Image (cartoon, rainbow, N blue to C red; front, top):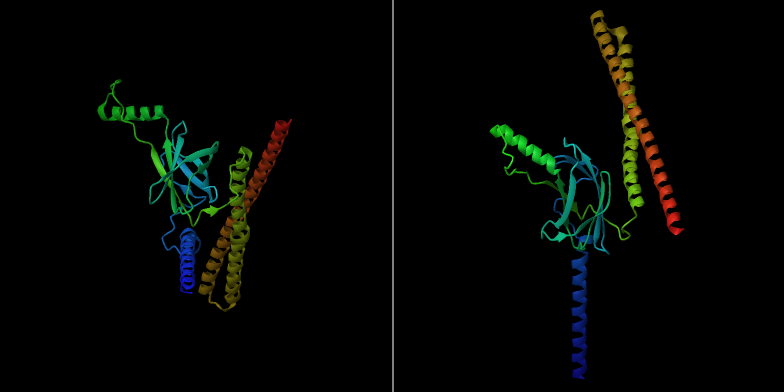
Length: 305
């Protein structure tokens, strides 16, 4: 009887131990989902100019993560803003912010100024990732600048002199797990699909600007005009009860308010022109998406044949 009781207690102990271990593992591996993180968010802003390189402005378009496959997808645009006649090229690397562990980075799509990067072997418990963008300027341009510098400093340049060329500039784009979207369906796409995605992202930004113009900025000008007109009516209604000197002052105020209305109308017109411009741009981009879709269909038909 005592043996049965001991066995029962022993079984309960092992069940409790296993339950404790399972719960502990669940807490550790799902803590991101439910624990409050009061550390400052370090995410580089999306769709904003990122400066810091010599010849290039960067724009972060998208950053997603597939936890099941352990890889991230980063969509990045570059804009040549320097004076070099030859645009620079770029090299990419990725590291964890605390451990400085490196993760492989592969360019899977590159067209004109658009890049899609895959960062692989990223663990689920990652916190902050740094994407290092190295700007590699043309060698001949760097050598020319170095010779010009020597000439300015010494008045002559020895053809056999070893030129002191600067190291490539580097900019770190930061991804914070609280701002990186998880997507378990994320996978490598076709070149056509990435073309469409960049255009779709641009259309999304245009739509936001259109909504702001239509819903806020243009109606605000109408409200301002209505408010000024009400003030003018009030001033005009008071004219009969003013002295001649006071009437002159009121008339001056009315002239200023008429000028204010003209200025607001001019601003409203600028917004309306901008709205038409954005609507036309959106239409052209949608036509481009349709054309890319048509080209992809043709390519698939040729491959099948």
